[in-house]
Image (tube, rainbow, N blue to C red):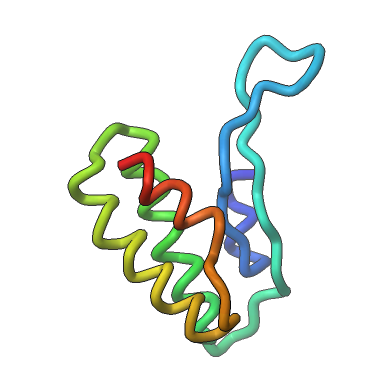
Amino acid sequence: ADDLHKTFVARPVGNLILKGRKSATKVWEVRARRTAEKSALAKTYDIHRKAFDLFVNRHFGEARPLLSEVCRSLRGRQGSVDVPSQHLLHLC
């Protein structure tokens, strides 16, 4: 599932411990199938994925500006706050 982003415009939104499991499962948001040309949304989701990896590895100072960029980009596209990136930014 970690290469899901190669086929789809997707980003990890959290590591959750699901009922009956002992270890965390990476949860993804999938938006669309990737096309040959990279859309603005795909680029933004790629930045989010990088920021998520930095966040999980506790590199908060490096993750913060990337998450801010994702928040700005998605706010412009959606017209509302992007909850996953905003939440991670708040935790940095």
